[in-house]
Length: 409
Image (cartoon, rainbow, N blue to C red; front, side, top):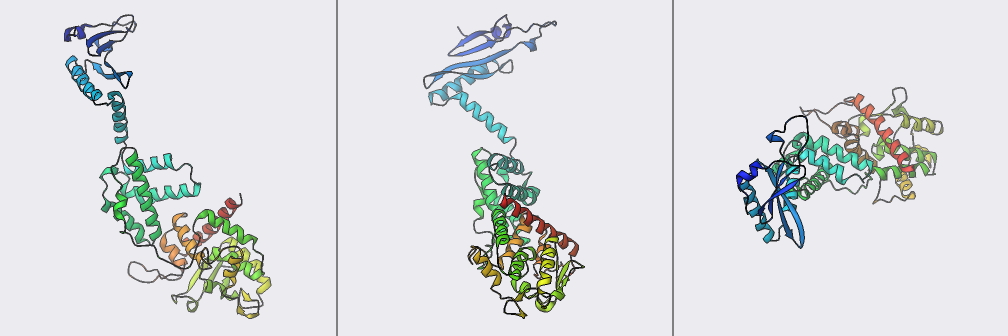
C-alpha cells in the first residue's frame, strides 16, 4: 500500500532506524532518535528518501533526498526518472556521483587554478629545473592575463595576444614552448570535465617561426651542466683552456674573445671594455666581469702578458689564437658542430637568462652586443643598464656553477 503525505509527515524517530515503503523500491528511511536533555524539535527529525533497485544483477541504492525538502510527490517523480535510466542501462547512483564531481570541478574552473592543478597532478615527476621553468612561465606570462578567466571562456584570439607579448620581447622560442604548455593544460582540463577543446591547437602557424641557425647551441640546463663538467676536464694549452672556460661566462662573439687585448681588461673596474671598431654594430661594449671570470684571467695573465693579446696564437705572440681553437676543443670533448659551437654560448646565455633567471630582454640583448634602442629609437650607450648588467653577469656565473655542481652530483 502506497504512503500518504500525512503518514510521511507524522513518522517519528524510534529507538532504531526503520523504513516506510511506498512501493516499486521507493521508501522513507526514518533515523533513530537522538537522546538529548532538550525536547526533540521537528527539525531534528531525520527522514531520507531512498530507492532500492537492481542493475547488472547487483542490488544498489540511490539517495533521492531529505524530507521535507523533497516531498512525497517529488520523491516519486525522482524514482520514476531513475527507473527510466535503469531501463536504458544507466546506473542512476553512478551518474549522480559523476554529476557531483563535475559540479565540484566546475566551481574551480579558472585558467590559473587549473594550471596550478596541472602542475601539481601531472608534473611532480619532472626535474626541478623543468618544474621551475614551467611555474615561471605560468606565473609570469599566463596568469597576469588569463589567470582569473574561466578556462572554457578564453578564446584563441585572447591566447594569441598573450603569446604575442612574449614574442615582442624577442623570446620567440619561449612563445612556442608556452603555447605547447597551454595545450597540455587544456588537455588536462578536458580530461577533468572543465573544457571542451584545446584552443592552443587553433593557433597552429600563428606565431613567428623560431629563427633557424646553423650555429648549434645547448640550452637545456641539465645538458649545460654536463658541458661545463666536460670543459673542466679538457686538457690542452693554457690559452685554449682559459678561452674555453671564459666562453660561457662572457658569451661575447668568438672573434671578440680571441682578439681580446690585455689593454681592454680593466681589473680595477672589473670589466672588459671593447672599442667600437671591434664590434659588429660599431658601438663600444662593456662586459662586466664575474668573480669566476676574473680568476681565470688573473691565472692566465702571467703566461700571456708578454703579448698584447689575452689569447695569443701558439705560432706567435703577435697574433691571436686561431678562430678554430675553441671549436676544435669542443670537438675533442665530443661536441660536434651539430651539437655545440663557440657561437652557441651566446644562444645558451640568451635563452637561459630569459627563461631561467628571468632577466629583462633588453639587458641580455645589450650584453650580447646587439643594437638595442629606447622608445625614441635611440641606441643605448655602452653604460646603459650597467648596474643591472653587472649583477646579471655575476648571477649568470653563479648559475653556471650550480649547473656544474648538479651535473657532478
